[in-house]
Length: 222
Image 1 (cartoon, rainbow, N blue to C red):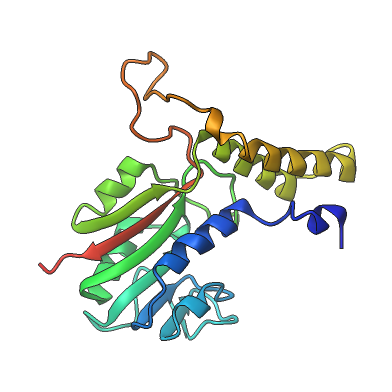
Image 2 (image 1 turned 45 degrees about the vertical axis):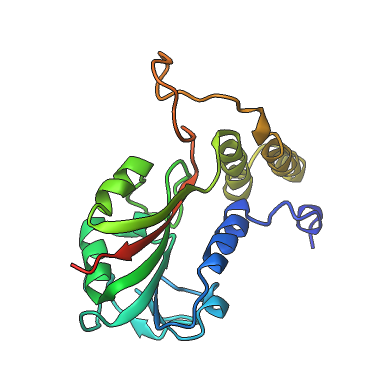
C-alpha cells in the first residue's frame, strides 16, 4: 500500500460526499439503479434492479438508458448516480425515467459540473444548477444541492489531477498535490461572498464554482 493510500489521500472526495447523499434516501421500495456498474450503493436499496449498458457485477439488466426496458409506472424509486453527463441525449433519458417511475415516485440523481474529462470518450455534458432546473421543470424538485463550494471544488479538481495525470517529479509531486487537495478542502470557510459575474452586479445565491450537483426530484401525479 502506497503512502498516500495509507493517509487516505486517494479516497475520492466526490465518492465520500455522494455516498452520504445517497444514504439519506435509502429505501426498501422497488428501485431501478441506472448506470449501476459495480453496484456501489446496493446496500441502501435491497429491492433494486441494476441496469447498465454493459454486463458486470451488480447488473441485472443490460440496455440503453434512452429506451428503458420496463413498463410505464413500474418503479417507486430510481437511482442514477454519475450517469447523466455520459448520455448522448439527456432529455430523452430523463423522459424515460419519468415514464417508468410511478406518479409520486422519487428520482435520486447526481451529475458533474466543473470536473475533468472522465470515462473518455463517453463524456458529453456538464450541468449547471439552472440547466438541471430546466431539465426537471416538469418534476417536483425536492432537493438540489452543490456537491462542493468554490474552494472545495478546487480541492476536488486538484485531487482528480493527482489521480489522472502523471507529473514530472513522480511520486513526490503526486503526494504534494494530493495532500494539498486535502488541505485546501479544509479552507472552504474562507469564502465570504460570491457574485454572479466579474462586475459584482449581483450577489450569487449559490456557489459559482461547483464540482457537481445532487438532485432528488419527485414525479408529479399529472
